[in-house]
Length: 283
Image 1 (cartoon, rainbow, N blue to C red):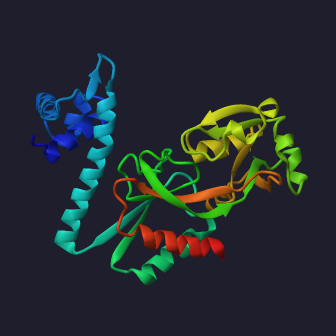
Image 2: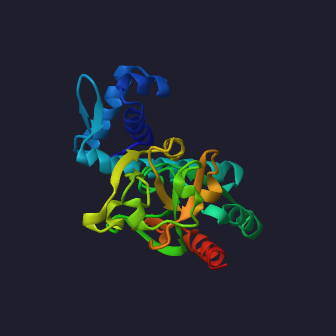
């Protein structure tokens, strides 16, 4: 069985662009060449990777698994070429919303001082794995429980929960709020990457919920006064927004901050990242 990088690039391009035509444009190929390349990959693997209809292209179950690995392989190939040609080693650390919060700048500076030969890149991807599952990064900082069948990781620190509200909200005059107070409001949450779930409240005391998939949209909606949000203290330092204020949620449990990596492939620099972030959070 021979699988080529060009075939993996083709699969990723089709899924990311949504159509064979757009994938062909990105790759500089004809649509027929894209179709043949994908067919060659499916034949080599012996599985169907995509469902094709007149309106969309979507990965099959096998395609989803192959896609995640393909992105990792392509990223590693790019790293190999870069290191071979420039001697530049790099580490991509993914995050979904707030990086490392108030420790973000210190983490970047300390890394550059301690390991100047390894170029650090922070990558924001709004997904449950902060880009790790999508192949966008080598390690990820997350604030939710990862899928233990696919990923391993450790908790490096804890962050307090805050309630975000409009500056003219009546609650803005308070020093703190409680979960029981919030149960009377509509809470805007990010189902993909957020740290807030309905399980934060007892089943018979849950607020209403609305949903978003982006931190900027979340802040915009909160500033309107229509909804409130629950987030980690990291959001306060990374996303200051006119029209939005934050108050501590006094009786809410803290949010664990985790560094995660692929279960079957612990990155060579994982230990360094864990040790440095653990030290910063302890301070």
